[in-house]
Image 1 (cartoon, rainbow, N blue to C red):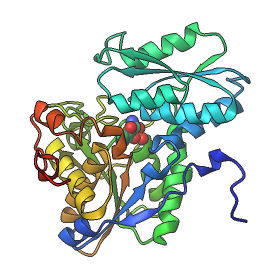
Image 2: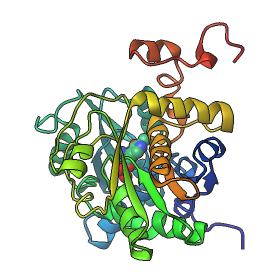
Image 3: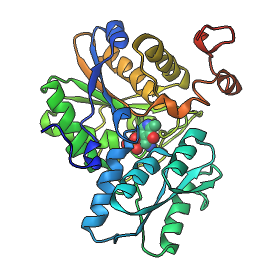
Image 4: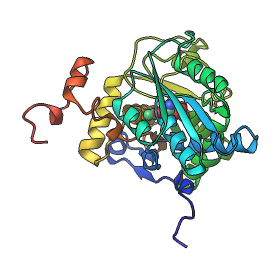
Length: 333
Ligand code: PMP
């Protein structure tokens, strides 16, 4: 049988690809899970499906009901796809600083989009608190609550980690990625440690996030800022509680962008910045562990979601970031 019986079964079972450049640079096998190959083009389809299934199992949503969520965009896209396939509506609250492509995608999928100004988590207007309030005030609505709903990390314990273990045949020495909700790193970390507790779990933390300091020195402390969307956490979410993190690296936007542009030019992969930060983290972990190791990371979402930002010379310049030769005026590309 090669026919898949329902579209939601297209979520997960993503390919694992060897990245030639980063592997050659380090003498390790750097392998990447192609999460952009999910139907919504990001790693968050997995969490969206588990969260909705969990709400159904708990009787929290009835046919025709509404799913409300605060998101940097990708979880909203995943939820909108899952909701359409199951007959629910979605209301998605998003900071207005996120890419225009994600907003257009959400509208195209039929989500009701609520944009709010970027604000600190302590501010009641923060997108997460706004989404909770809307869920409380809307009849027949459920709040997905991806940050503190551990159905999110279950998707990675039972899905992503299991797949990585099978795809590598258990030949894996390290795993590393960045954290937004923390669902991916905690779920994959817990899942892989249950198979082999010697697998090293690394965190790649962008500037402006507080987790590097927390795992290094026990204190939640942020420094600087990042333009990466979907990652950069300032607190220990329920999904991050008990995450088995062994080592941590702080990765700059420039380091991540260098990988993003290199992966495009040398390997034909068009990715978002969190993927670049993950690959830069994998290279850092490979250098720490030494040659001959197998290290897995995540390619979180498609770069087509950032054509107006990461792949736009004017935008890169406006943020003080390096413009690659291929995007400069007069380039043949
Ligand atoms: N990269 C991107 C582009 C994302 O949207 C997200 C989700 N917020 C992540 C990485 C991080 O995933 P997680 O929420 O599982 O930590």
